[in-house]
Image (cartoon, helix red, strand yellow):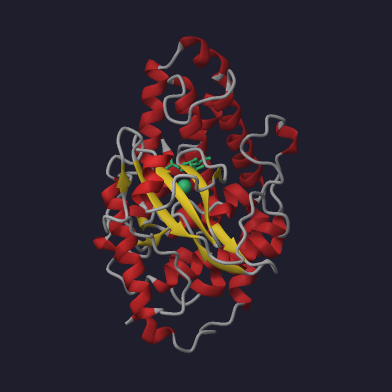
Length: 366
Ligand code: GN1
Ligand code: MG
């Protein structure tokens, strides 16, 4: 099936293509053509129903960065022979091609706080550079993606119509998740709070969406499919969700799930390194909520999928999404237990972080 896609980009038929990365939604490949290397990605159209909107968003972001931050590294999609950056050759959906950034590497698991710091700095830099961009011009490629009240309602619906045996098995977990509804209320307050700004946010801040150089320095963020208007808690929260614990969302042994405070500190420091002059005082007080928000939403999404028969995430073994949901709920619980320590860390960083490290920041925002 990839042959026709490669041909559309003008690659010869015997071009080597190998699978790349481990996301749950899109399929990614590495393409080698002589000395050049590319990343080819198939957009999962069951999830992203309008790939053209993604292409337009990437175009707008790329154009803005090129004008205002010409030195920023930004992998621009490579046009096919037709001139379009989206290729569809039939029922397999849409593909895009990106240049492989020379000497860059991706990591699947954060292995020291320095990496977490660098990743947070890159996601912070992305939102900071886009601060002057009229955020309303971006399409919502996945409408209501991080809409916690909606995720909660969908969870309640799954309680009414889910598989009875699964509802029974998940009873205790469902009970715990229901007790955390106050996190939805807090989000609803944010929606009407002028101290929270809609910003250009990435919405998928896992470590493999950052390119690093060989010395663990961040180069740029990648995978802009879910770049949309959003709140900073989405990006910071998903970093907490995916970097704080020594084990991933796939881990079934809950005793191994933990909150590593030094990673929390690294993320907050890295993000503020770029965003200290951009975030409002209200936002700066909400780092801990960011983690609760995202962990709760992910636990709700996994348990909802489990109860409904795994239509969204799929499953490789019986109970897979239950394991993921229990994992995320456990991490939420451990995170909440640490709230006083986490708040202290964030407050200490904010009290010592000098403002305006970046003399040119006023111009950048105009
Ligand atoms: C999906 O495809 P991947 O792994 O980047 C999901 C995220 C979830 C994540 C959980 C479009 O991301 O929101 O947090 O799985 N992306 C979409 O592993 O639903
Ligand atoms: Mg993704």
